Image (tube, rainbow over all chains, first blue to last red; front, side, top):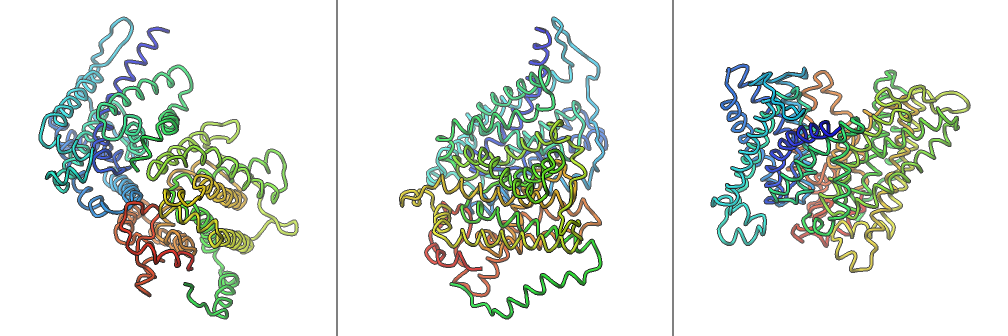
Length: 287
Length: 338
């Protein structure tokens, strides 16, 4: 029992690392630009497919295909900002929400056309290498996923805390108008936020590629879950999103392993409702 | 205020809507008309919440499903007469809508939308996984059809039954919208804080609007169940909620004709793309983006701004909280037009 729980927790932390990676990008967008991007799950899905194409068609190795998919999805993010979200910057909050639902449907349909519905798998590196400590076993692939996620999150933390752009991003998440007054240019920062979020979501997708099967619909549930994480962690709070992600990964795995696996995907939404009912005062101000 | 309508033209128009489909031979076209009736009913009800109260609900598909499952289970498992089950389905959807409305309507703006989307996902997962009640993905088969004088309805009779449902829903919503309650709902949409300051029970009214629209959705769901004679979780997914939202958006939220036009157009248009389903979705997604950016007020709003620029001005949007105040004053008197 003890080993089983330890195993579930370890697996949960690894899935949680992916959640954290995807959510930390989205939280920057939500916090800074105060908008909801339901297409974030599709950014993650595109990341996985870009990696797959780079690996199979071009024969790229792990690091190159990771970089390709990060750059590719960052570009998709910048284009979405320019053509979907920028025209709606001064529209009521529900308009970008609807437009992002449209973007999510369009991206999903486009990848269905390009890559077909048949499930594909990204060949992993380090196949078959498994470490085992005290009955808890972890494949090298999963450790790699977790390590890369951790490195990327550290880079993001450094970027947000130390660089000028990061300071601009944080200033805008505190107060858009004042940040504008002291010279932060929203037309430059907004695309950067989307590029950042796209790159992180793309990395998350590229990293899970070897662990799960790829399908054009894989982003749908992910998009909703990472949004829940953003709300739980607090919009704009990268550290909060990371903790929330790991917590969700562990909880899901524990419920999956110990109780009803069929209800695993409900957890995120139940947590969302509980959090929303308690946190409503602080959240209501940011609509 | 109201455009004068020629009563004779209205009468002729109604006669055409009721009688013309009798000439339609193909069951396919009749089926489309019946689906339009269901969608018009759903969007008209949803309009109370989104268009008038200004709350962007994304769980209407779940409420629609509650009605369908309720009516299907009451008739197949408990042997209720069809029409009794039909009405009960509306009530059950309203009752189940209450625990959704109470916590989520405490939230504002997009947070409400996200919470309802979460509830939509929960409802779907329960429909799929509560196998002893819902039969999971297999669905409930052999739901009895609607009957008239002891015989199951024919296609054209289903269409007429659908028209009756649409007419009753339209009348109910119009009644609410034109009443004091309707104006209070619109006050909430325009500025909730100001509405509360004027003594309006904003929370109570929002819950009321949600429950009424849940009741209507439940009836539409029951109609669906007894028309298809089969219900399964896939008919009440998040995509349905999004589709209904888009229909309302395309037609024009906060207008009485908006849902009718939106549901009609968006039921027919995708049929032209039926051949290529993948491209149909792509088109749908892109249309959604284009609509939001270029036609934020839907077909009705666009038409009004063309016919008379004065009336169409100002954003008729659910939560134009932070928007410019220009055109707000002139809007009060034209929201009931249609």
